[in-house]
Length: 319
Length: 227
View 1 (cartoon, chains in turn blue, purple):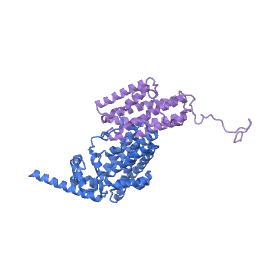
View 2 (tube, rainbow over the protein chains, first blue to last red; view 1 turned 45 degrees about the vertical axis):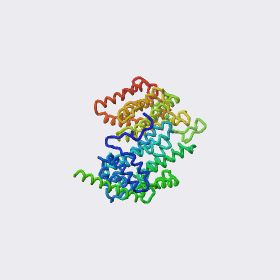
View 3 (tube, rainbow over the protein chains, first blue to last red; view 1 turned 90 degrees about the vertical axis):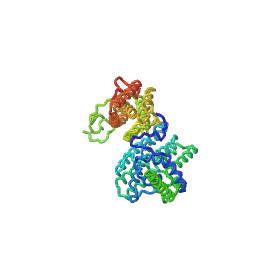
């Protein structure tokens, strides 16, 4: 068995289809300019459409056009908002595949770094069990909310972004970037469960959040250990982690901004070993990107243009 | 009957407590002396740890390359419990005069067993779940259970009791792992072709295991047979 695999080699059963990872990567680098956002999404339109056909995301695409992810990512989850259920399921499915990739990332660390210290392997082995349980928990929650595995396309950009071939960068990416994002998302899910009175979801996600804090702590400790006495390695690792954090901020959707759909879970992150300085830096990195107003306007234009085009196509076909 | 609570300096100054052997209450028929001395047991523990550590690593490598979700999640638990086993074996080594830094010491008994482990870990692509699981759950873990139980029967039951405790706990968990693996493999091998694949893989690896002499390199006749 070879060391290191590409994200395209992650094995899946027949329920899954892949989403082009380019979309997620593009969202993280959009400027605060309506026209550019619209142009980018129109360019990706055919790829996005092909990816959602036959999945439960198709109705969202039909309603909102190629910019549907802008709406999904940038509007906070609200039980009273339009399309609240499909958006909740889309979020929950995203968490499920995120846990799946976190399991695979931690597990691969056991094989990819055979010479790593035993304590590191113990931490990764423990994380394998935790992530495996998380996968089971989120499959149950997905069903609890009326969904099922494979109902939406899976983007493997989480694995792609954080599974470096350097062990320090791997734990910086998986345990601090990905698991840190999980802390933010799960705190938001608990808020949502509080709003809806969903005690099942609230308790389960709270347990998962407690595990994630431990995993972030693993990352905090091993980045230090793998880069000790090597400031240049530490700097490269921190640069890598900043890049991961930027990509995982989805253009400001996860940030400290007032209009953020997913706020940064400061208290949870502090408990996990993030410093105030790191949180300040994360706040600055994640806040860069188009404003919610820009994205809302772009989403509106994309929706209108999509419906105009569809209408013209239908009229052309009928005449 | 003396009423002394504590012995004095003369023959007459004994306590009145009844004299029992260390093995009388409850009755304990264990006897001193086993097949392995301290050095031999330390080597065997390093051999056992070698197999456990490599199982952790190879199963970790497979999780991403196996398409069946319940196999991924099931392996997550087996990986953690196997890592705990390797950890416990490592903690035993300094107690067996291997030095304080021996916690992470693993040792293959010979190159043939190291090659056998590499062969078990070889299957890679998503269509080879049967070959992956058969190697570990049909061949390697049953072999380890057999050897661990044999060690516990043959070692000094009093002097080497800490090793016995560790191995007994490991065997209990490994039996659960084998049962899980058998259920998964039975479900995956639901026709003649897949059942034959499973048998072929198990036979191939059992042959290599026998040639290597097993996890301690000194396999005796009849061991390493198919479970």
